[in-house]
Image (spheres, rainbow, N blue to C red):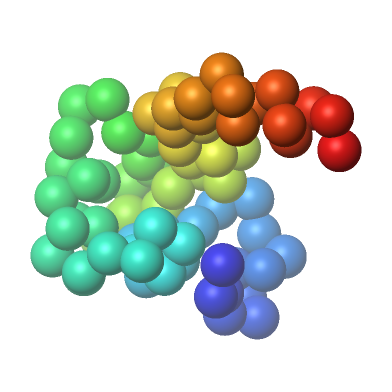
Length: 75
């Protein structure tokens, strides 16, 4: 994930960090942060995403076929 120096040491990500991590457009990243099931924190006029909650959100939406999971476990 490409991050700025500031966000690398933070427990929060920016919308740009999410955009880069998921390799999506800025518009798609803003659509995500406005979803009810997406973890966000509003701080003043800024949108921040809790890092651990974001990674858990991604994990919940990642499907790994059984064959691939088995191969990953064997390594």
